[in-house]
Image 1 (cartoon, helix red, strand yellow):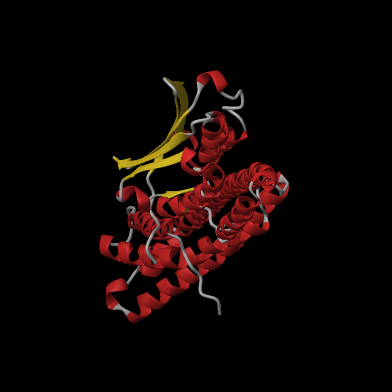
Image 2: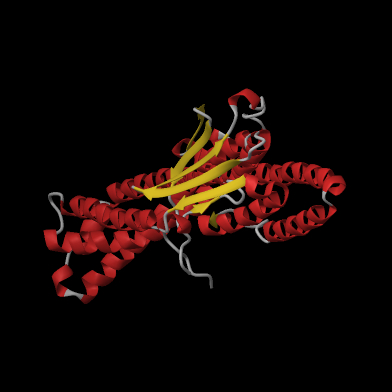
Length: 356
């Protein structure tokens, strides 16, 4: 037989109903001329326990006759018929118990007379209690359905957000590959050896990113290793013209972030900054963790006169949308340019991988 499980709310309703209805029955039995107080309490709470069986059966009636799908006449007929039938059986059982107790226990003399004298009130109280149980069960069902609907909405939003994140992440590699293959194509006629070296570095980078295809979040330390692979590719093309600088706190390396979040910013820094300057340029990454927040800044040198009109293109928009999809209003991103420095700063909640 399957074990019936009750929620905390159902437990509370059950015990409150048992004791509360028992006190009502005790008051009816004790009403003048009536049963002694102690006997009334014992007997009232006792038969109230039996009444819980009929009240509990109201849950079945409510499930078979849902409010939203059952005509009013059928609802009334179903519950009134069940209330009358179950209450009649309960009253008869109560009368039988009163007769047995009067015959077997000297202190309970007169119990049968008291119960039969108040039978009409007891029957009416039973009807009312059953119908009250019906109303409570309908309320519990509505609460459960509302909670389930809210859970479905939350789950739907999470799936939509995950789908958006996956779509945004999928945009990164094609964009990066497009630029890398253009660079390789240019190098094949100028320096075939460097073109081959760049192909090998590109293969290493892509192999590393494939392993992260199923990961929603990675530590910053892992993202930095990806950036090293990316920069190795660009170093083949620019050599000493590309200078890299890092100011990363150790505590920040454990913080989680979406994979390949920084790579588009480095790519923008190379394509729209370093590549536009004959003497080359620099890229600096700063990472600070403080007060439960993670702050990342990517800066690069650039020439305002040679600046590309694509500074707010695919890469930067992709990063912004991924931050919004993952963190919502808890993330901020700002881009600015002044005195030959282009700067992108982002901040979001600091999270760490939970140890298993």
